[in-house]
Length: 74
Image 1 (cartoon, rainbow, N blue to C red):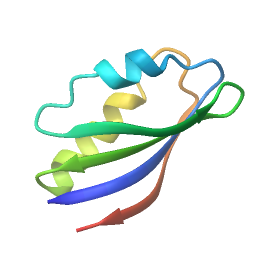
Image 2: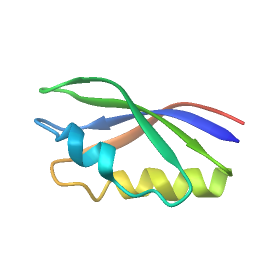
Image 3: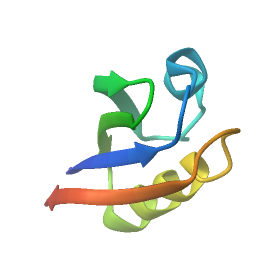
């Protein structure tokens, strides 16, 4: 199991859209958000490659400016 904290940057991001994003075998949990800054998420995946694919999916969400990994633990 691999888990990661990520920052999804953007203004007025829809938490609902981020929660409902289908990430195959990965699962996401919103930790916190600020409408002018972005959303911090915890993602758990079966492998590092699956985690990387999941992070890329967040970049496709409307309003997302950038996605940064804060920390990853295998």
